[in-house]
Length: 335
Image 1 (cartoon, rainbow, N blue to C red):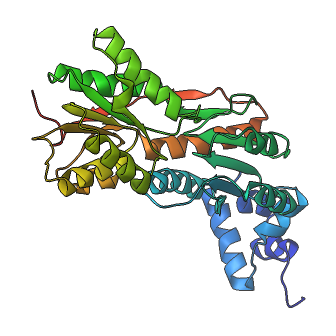
Image 2: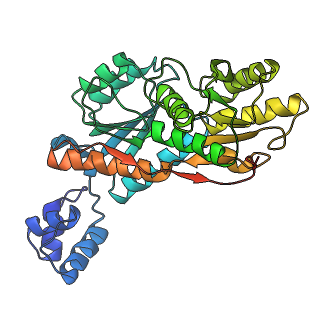
Image 3: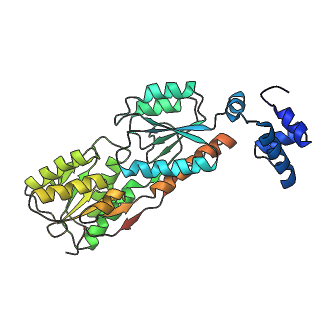
């Protein structure tokens, strides 16, 4: 017998067929508990190690997926990544995380690397709205699902929350609390995936409740704490009157709370604010932030399930819109 036992050696030791050993190793059915025990004992006795990587490469399958992500800097991304990873582990998949940068500038080199490594699929997580990036993914030949984003031109399945509807609900929540002069710290102007939709939801809620919309009460951010702080400072220095703010994300909402503190103001006594995402940042803010909650962890899990369904069946999954809810904490008061 060679130093490296083979599947035939295991079959002979367990007194079963090679086909039976193969079925045990690959998690298939068609054998008894006693047979599996004999096979496992034979493997242990012989020191046989199953080379899943070699088998998968032979089948042009690596059981590895890649997640393209701008960069992990908030728990927004971590929640989605945790959902993907837990679902992947349950199905014996490995996950490779690729940081493409806020602008997606490293997407091309990652796509090239991933196709060379023969990953089974790609999940694009909250990628920036860029037709060039969408084109690279769509034409890579690697199955892909998008989470918390979408492509406006290419038919790539996605899972996300209806941003317009969620921002409408956030604005309506403030209105229901008696606020009639409401500002918005919006996303970037050219962001058709989230920024514009959340702004549209805010505008539609004001219109439906017959409240005036003042363009000077809208400041634009880059969905970050730094840009949110700049925008909030500008809004406060304008001396425009408002009692509530709708923020495009929790990071920006917390930045507005800091800007208020710098100006000798407090939330919610001087103005109320509602965030978006329900990250850990919202829980740790002072005061704790009322916010729109996206089911980020579940979105990550579902994105993986959609991808593996595509890999196993070859059928493009339907895109999905996930539910949201408003989590009430302490940053909004009744007027």
